[in-house]
Image 1 (tube, rainbow, N blue to C red):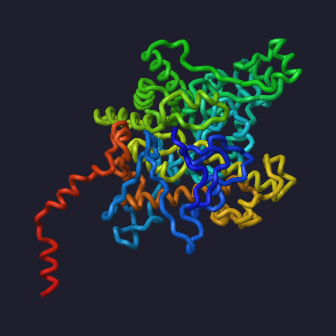
Image 2 (image 1 turned 180 degrees about the horizontal axis):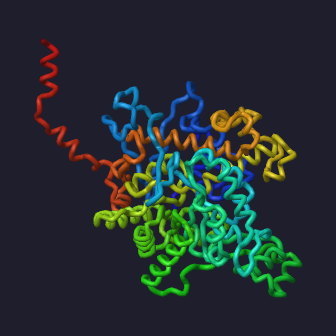
Image 3 (image 1 turned 90 degrees about the vertical axis):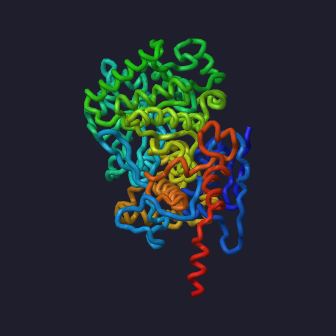
Length: 560
């Protein structure tokens, strides 16, 4: 197993737990006091792109380990001349071709284009309590920045206040809260996406949402995710709640209706219950039947009035990947999110997450390969998003390049949740009266925060950017989690602009697979990305073998 360093001395970052390739800890805690790269970027923003203590240090790269087939085994290419995709109104002069002028806006969709100010989106934030507790920071941050956010599965099913009559929703306060929170600050960029699983379909989530919100909401079909190969789970510590979920039709483990289970809970040997969702397509035994069922589902959603429909699939094998790409393309879906193993979780079984499915880079490489097969036939392939252990600006660049031109977004799960926790913890310290309401976990500001300041204006590098956008009076309504999300997004955006500028691509649509190298032969073989010292080697040799007299003529002319 590849081990990742727990600290980065150049950036001044430290992981509390065991870090993974994303630079996040394997276990990301809401009460964490820092300070991994993502956590610290929520405060410092783009400053974290650079080594600390400038003027007193020099810094050298420590990233010399490119073993195995993973995103770390790709490196980014750069060029020493040219400029491609120059935004309208600019020229190819050195004054215009600067990284702040790189256009990183993106869009996805078949008939209706959904715009985003930068090519990221959240993972599915569903019925896990952590998603509900910190939703304001997540959603308002996404709306202000302008990237899509996904309401995950089972939100209605676990809501005690939701009212179902004859198995169909007539009242869904938690789902309404989530949608309304985003729409309050939505300005035409980004989107709110609501996901469906088996239970959501049975409960009439799609019907409820279209009747109340119309085309303001994108609906998403759910096949799976990169963290597990079974349905979603949550954990509850109340027998009463476990019985409620059982009555709602969920699988609850252990069964709270069993007398011996209730007795064990009473005496404390059982302290919690796991609620599980159902697997889809269990009554189907052929690829043709899956396709028929899928197309019928899409047709039904369109009949309801949905103009934008997406699909989320997990790290299943190659057959399922091909099915997802082909069916989504034929159904003219607006986006296909492909989540590789290495993805995050609310409560997936741990060893399942460690051992099942196709790792992200392998899955994403195959997604490109299969999409190209269709594109070479003249087919307009569905727009795609890649997910699974991606958190930094270099991950965004590599994933977009690997899947170009089909990838339009990078789906980032846990990394885009960290701002919500951090903001709530700071808010709870600065205003103890709202600590419980915002689910703050700290009693005082840690040194990792106080080194930046003790007020929101001092702490968050992005504070005044948001104030400029919403106005000074409105700032009192913006949760600190949203300010942290903006600040993190600013770091990711600036970092991505810098990488694109170095590749001489001044708009996102210009990125290609030529902008990345493979650092070992195995990665080259599995991804089709050229080995680092062989890319453009033929061009290099032609330069060395050229017999033209450009230099000789110029020097001769200069002597006259």
